[in-house]
Image (cartoon, rainbow, N blue to C red; front, top):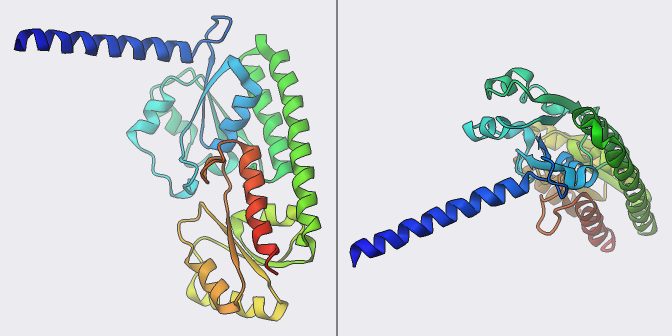
Length: 286
């Protein structure tokens, strides 16, 4: 009985492994049975663009969890393992030191092309920076897989139109609810979005702000009539935002810089719209 049981277990294990191999192989094949371009991105705002522009011609993975600050992400052996088979590696300009060419080479992959996308240390949650990101990613995909250049370019134009439409719709919602008449204190890495949204930014604060700096911000906020604190989900500590909010008696809203940072926001459009929803919840309380 035991031998028969072990034999059955052995068969089950073999079948599971076989199914896993088939699933993996199918994951990196396009609908035309041509191998997909294997892309690795540092963050989900890059991988989101790769998915939209690359369609069924690419297979993409992201490295940094969307709820984590890229600056506080620790390189692990699994990180190098992810890079080992990549054909194209995409990173933000602010990732380029942590994810250097030397690090990529240390994975043992000598055939990967590393490309830096974006500028000004900005994430793609700011619409104009996302448009730049779409162009950068498209150029990288075309260079890595020129036979699908027309396919990538066509999808990129569609994505840019969708991005502009979403941004326009959300900007109207913000304007209609008085964002352009609201003074805010903002986490540094949400300042680009806050300015795009039309807020009057009274002051910004970095992730590693000191108690003395918080005290100065509170005083400035009081003098300038700040009405809202905008914090960054990916920052390692929310105590600064909570302290400012408490001292000034004003609400705080926490926004995400990356798709997937908040539950139910796996795409840029969902994440972007959710950020606006969260802001409007506070503006309507004014």
